[in-house]
Image (cartoon, rainbow, N blue to C red):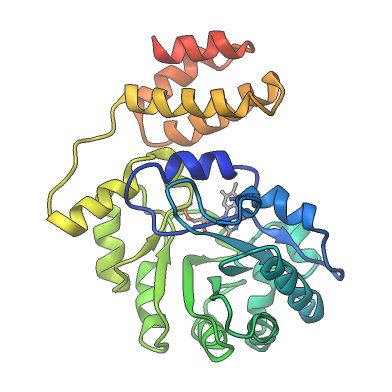
Length: 308
Ligand SMILES: Cc1cc2nc3c(=O)[nH]c(=O)nc-3n(C[C@H](O)[C@H](O)[C@H](O)COP(=O)(O)O)c2cc1C
């Protein structure tokens, strides 16, 4: 997630079980081949040759763009640098991105989704998987199935569907039943995404979409143990205990200590508040702690308050 989940966050979130793969923030492709540093910035995991988090969870590099030649050139560049998977972003709703013809704007024309995906699949020539992420459409859902089919016809090996249109932004509800509709028209594996905040949400999304696998966005930060909870239930049929405040404070402290090795303290302070903001959306304790620390500007003081 752009501006939110970086390599440090990926490392912390994949320290425990539940997450099978991760995706970088999108790499914006315009009309040129980007230099290696652009890929290393989004995906430092390329540098050690593993393209995975320290626990071995793959990190797929996400490209966002519409120029087929540039997408192909950047896919080849990523492959050369050691990428083990490329994901294509057809879901970003940001006005600036859409105005420059990227992300969800391609969903208005399934043929463009096809051509963008095909360009990358051809460039990669079967050496690593190419996956795609779509929303249900731009303004409406009329092209949802056509866009999904376009990714499959072009050779994508997996499709993640965020169950809202671009114009629906991030407003609830997510229309998981539409993912079920899409699944009936494609044969590639489909992953459900959108508003899966709890194990109960997972059950509902799974029932309505028919997908076992889900992609967690904001909720991976809101409850860093949600993926483990889902995996535990899949394997045992049992519920894990709820995530406690000390667990939450612990992961935030770990995050801050790692980030402060490379970022200025004031930036780490605001990153910590950003993570807390995700947590407080559906956790009363996080809300109380956030209110207590929101005006603190010194990082150590902030972390001490959270641990108190
Ligand atoms: C701040 C922010 C940044 C995001 N950046 C990306 C991104 O770079 N690539 C992507 O595929 N989705 C991105 N998303 C969308 C999420 O991956 C996800 O599809 C969406 O938030 C719905 O899932 P959720 O309800 O689990 O968060 C972003 C979402 C947010 C809120």
